[in-house]
Image (tube, rainbow, N blue to C red; front, top):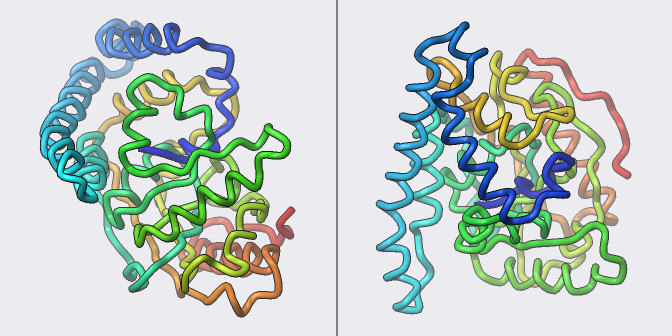
Length: 295
């Protein structure tokens, strides 16, 4: 239901029409049973992929009807986050929490490794996400993201920053946690890219009292296998995850929150959040993030 599916650089997808996306996902389902290379190395992989797709579809159907009922009643629905949690389990993720989300209104800043981040963090916290606006046009995925109150932003459209800030302020007024992946794309899970602080200006001052909580999404030894980096096409990445052997243990580490009002500017907010996530990466025996300043 977002990301930075949200802010991933989907080079392989930008030129595709919605029709070709539908075709692409049809190929995804077919490829569960038609990949020769996978069949040679893991004969169970096609069945594993098909089984996980079945579980994902079942989770969607289970959550969709009650969600629509809540929406028709004019109430905020808990079902999008429940779907995200079920979807994470369906693909094999087994999530542990280290710490807890801060109480009250919170704005989460997290590292970004994979589209699985959205399923896991959304299911654990009920958060909405800030996402690249192109996601809104994807068949099915865009609609699902909208059901979770995703804030869609454009990084290419000049002069649109004011409207994006207004949308983000409205989201913060809704008492639903909001998550931003400030790296702006997915990384390798063991290092951090510079944080992009532009949208953090919405917190100076915030529309209501809000705490910022850095989050380290930790895939442990599986990070290199899970990370979506380079020019890997979207469909190939999804297939690789669905065919993967075994469960995927991961830990969501909720770090010490802080008050943005005590920061001098948006760059200071980005730097403090990045430093805390980098320290957590280093403390949990992964390669530490270099001390790059936000840009």
